[in-house]
Image (cartoon, rainbow, N blue to C red; front, side):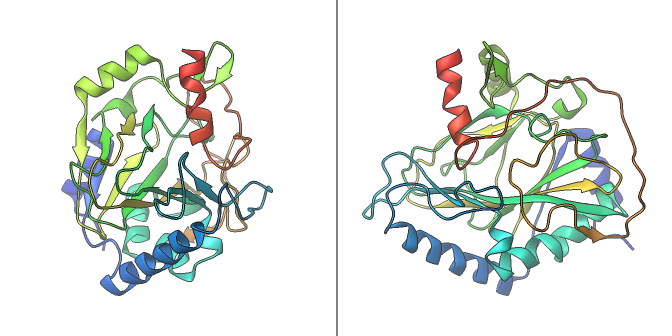
Length: 290
């Protein structure tokens, strides 16, 4: 028996995204909120990115202007390594069951991160696709964006272009610089064609990694925090290094290991790993290259 209905699965493959409520239990959601609140409190003691992940880069990334009075903790890399609650949400929850319905039965964990927009912050996400950051032998990959907070029209919600996962893979390179963002003309088309994904805390937006998406700044007095997990079909093999490595990468979270590789037909440029804590520093280069 599946967790998702056939209509939900059909909608995902037609549009490239699907919002599902109650992806984790209320108790787990509250525990995740508590963990994040503790991380925000700790960030007040720091003036630059801090902590360390598997590849030596910082775990906690701060937006420009961060200070103790107005904290700007915008990214936590691999929170599954430092929180049992975030691990549970990614590896064994209703969210994970839904992923198995879409790209299973055998599903692999690729990476996880938290993207947060604290009230009145400056963080926005320029238009892009996820697949060019994490190319695999086939494109059965899904980004699951779990809403830790209620996501509204005012606090910088995800914007997507329905059906764009069926189109081309857009370059994230401009004038020889990997900017992590698509061409400005295509981005304008995305703005004109987009729909907004909102939901109450505990909802999840499943997004095909070839779907065009972005988001604006948080203009509200309320935080917008997402726990983001990327999953792949077990027979989709990574073609480039993991941009958010963790000790759990390649862990089979549903089904079993088959030892098989499945390929699909596509062509794209290889990505470039971020040198700093997150891809936000790469997207900062987009204006410089434009």
